[in-house]
Length: 208
Image 1: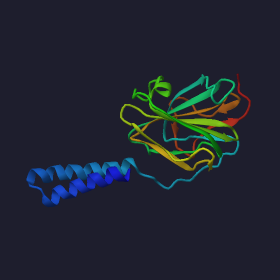
Image 2: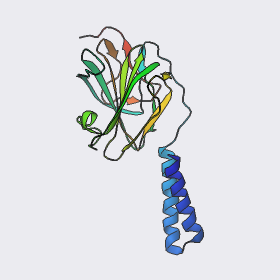
Image 3: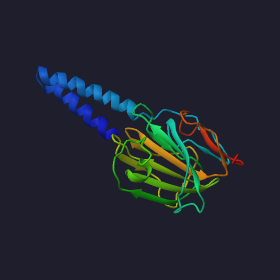
Image 4: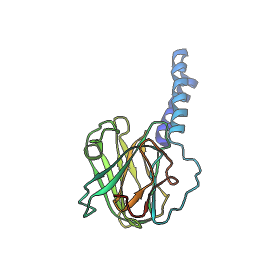
């Protein structure tokens, strides 16, 4: 996000210092935009809750979907999916839901449906990362109508720690996490999540 902030600051200061009265008005607007961008791309200090044998939320936001889906490229059986919607006002940093080894990372091109649309998980631009941890899980960063740039830092073979910063989706959007049905879901639709802190699921027998 530094590039966006730097560009807005440079434009604003340039217009204020060297522009006429109308240009200075635009300059003040540019500085306001820079301030907003600094807030959008904030990276606050955060206590990371270590949740052994469980999955933590990979994103700040609200749970918008909990369902059962097929993911044959990574799981032999159906899995649970928990979808977290990140608004423009949420912290954009994404964090590792579990500790483990990144065994696959797959960027996929696609469209830009609204992030809350159920089709977005399969049809939008997205990056899916499979983590061989305890438990195993997959994480999918999904672009939206506004948010279109996905950053996923770990590469295949990297060891990551639960709660570690692993990337971001610029200007919000959605993150899905997939895990075996045997895990007990610990969130409900509408719940607020905090990346690296909110428990999403734990190793336990399902009620099904």
